[in-house]
Image (cartoon, rainbow, N blue to C red; front, side, top):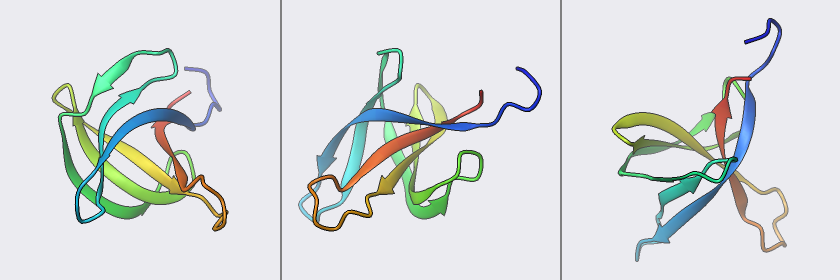
Length: 93
């Protein structure tokens, strides 16, 4: 890693299911290189700031391959549009 490099948001494609109560549950994600990862389970969901990458939204603590990871859902500010938000993961550069 080079000195002075910063952590960044990596926007990812996420497969999601919606429960009857409207809860959004991520089930898989596709990393930027095309690799697909199954999300074993959602441990918790809470509003949070992405400290390393910046931005705010809902932080999903998920288990992927037996490891705990943070997956963020960043809400869109366009209230009238069809895009409700985007998913990202913090990555160290």
